[in-house]
Image 1 (spheres, rainbow over the protein chains, first blue to last red):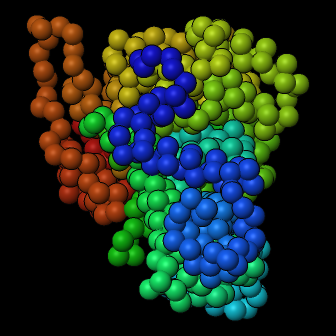
Image 2: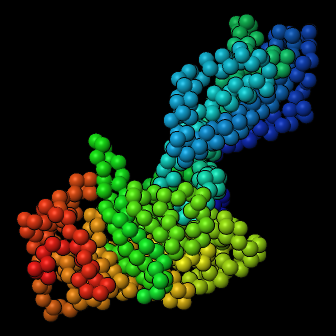
Image 3: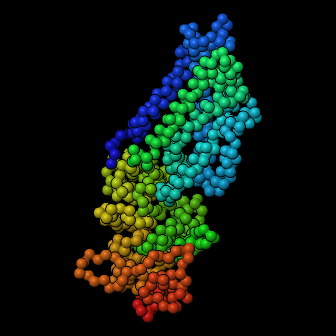
Length: 284
Length: 318
């Protein structure tokens, strides 16, 4: 029998055994802290124009350069992180809640399976970005609508995974035991199935966090995302493309931030998947 | 025997299989279980004994037939309508690993039935869970622990405590010891027997091991391909089997006596597919005494002495 250590600590120990996962986690913590403390860390207000130093190269005055209005790139990237991370987090919450509900119903209530899965198939048939653009066109550009659109885009992924897991779980004897005790459908879904889906949801949520940040950036880049008055990594890149020849830092800084965060989330998601997989543990 | 608690008549359960065929898992079983009686049910894998147990409890809907519990018909009732009966009939599962939700503590697992049926306050429930743990021989500190911290035998005790939480009159024990080490099997069987005597439980005890079944049962039903071949008081079945299949099973059981002689060759081959059972008597393909008539006619379960019935056409032989 295993030593009585809390499951959360065991998981963390297994997770951090891989050096790359540790780096990814540290990078994400740094970015989240930087975003939370942006008002104190940023040298300037994100909208403050320094007309005398437009398109300035990185230097002591503007560490990471400035844009065509002389706005400080570092400050804008820090404030942009708030928007990007907030959108990503809210999309994860929305897609997980909707997807889990649909997946549980499809997997456990037999007669709902076919209709719900055809619906998700239909949504998944569109490329993420195309569906997001179409939804944004219908909803109108605002941060709330970006969250709504991306939440809808990523719901089918969660629903599929949850349904698959439920189909396996529902055949286990403990579900039948609950039925024998007189538990209703709702109780079986929420008390017996949902807690066993947690690890799958954590892994999928991590991946969706990354995808959502990337797709949000793409929407902003295409001009259908968060309105350009609010700095996000996506719309920073969108305006910077005109000055690519003169001021490449304008693209490299927000672009690098996206790459760092999305890559870290992918690595973390992979790590979590391995750490949470009991079969792989025996092999490692 | 006391009044019948459970009366099963012509119970059938067919499952649709590939190619539009039917798997006839249970094909017309009739049996009774009296109050406080243990009915053993033995048969090979695929004989339909577990399916019969689940159909009796309404965990799977029977295709046809009647199940009367304490005089009330429960076959075909909806899940909602079955709910009051869930307090009176329970199940103990074969696999002590899959049958306990890994994410729930022992007190939640055992106390769940009381939550579902709104019995007592949460303090009452804790007291009752503590009492049940003691009753099944687990330490009181098991309450806050998770199933993975226990061995197979201990988990089976948790499963038994869960089934007892609602104070049922009747339990289906579906191969409760088959997945356990032999050394632990006896402990769990003895626990079930003690509980059965103390609480006056009626048990349908399903197993494929004749010796275990005979040890705990008052009467034993021998099933083959979804049908009852022979049913008799346990000691009589052991001493004077009246069906060739029962004889073959008894012959196949190991005898702890190196000097004992084998009287007959054990059964050859495997049980036929329930999707394509033999005509007439389903056992005829493996029966050492099969005759021409066995392929034509399905033998009825006929009483040969009080409380002892068997389904065989060759009454000239046994």
